[in-house]
Length: 308
Image (tube, rainbow, N blue to C red):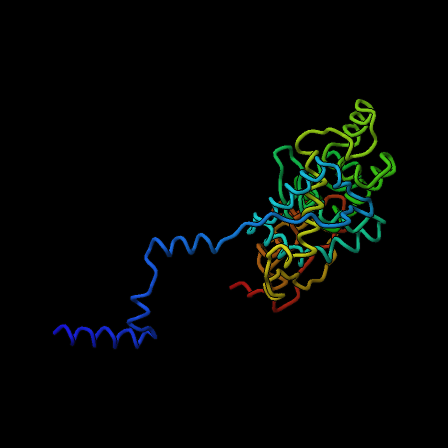
């Protein structure tokens, strides 16, 4: 009986592609656990050479600047799920943002400001800032965005990117550098002005700022570095893994729309898809008493299942 059991076990192992010796030599649970632990490694990261933001050098030879940059590189490299999501979204949204920044004369590096502000989503902050660029209501209206119960153009990526670019250009003119303009996007132009006067310094890297603003530019630069060199920092993906924009076209609307669900059906889509492409439409209807002309984005046919 014992010999028969040995042959039975051997036969089962052969089916599984194993041998008796393989089972005998298999590591114990304790050794296997140690092997798994040793297979996961966390590495210190080398500081990139010639770091710059918007063409302005980063003085990493200064000890506190080195440590602050190192912190953000580590945090964003090892927060793997979040950074991988950012890489996926960037493939979809950077092609919208990049040409607008170029048109406005704002350095391309500022697309990473949108990354840290909202994670490339239409986020809402506790203070009421909204959209990819986290624009406050007063600022949005000052720069010509329509914001009311029906419409909130802070959620319109093209229009909000233009507003952010205009704001950044004015900050650069006022403060003298793109790095300070980036910091002012977080702290406000007045806030940076006040700290420059108080500390008798006019360089971002010489200023002692609050925790959030003190990290702000370094977070932008860390995401820029990682997203420009994903494989260097351990991020592996295929092009087909990245999110893609759905081809679309725009229709003009200069009247009221009483029901966007019915409106969507006329174009072979549903209410959800209409709102995905037009997050700036905030309600189920559009009053439009002024007969203003709006451009509503609709997806090309074939990219969504038609509603039942």
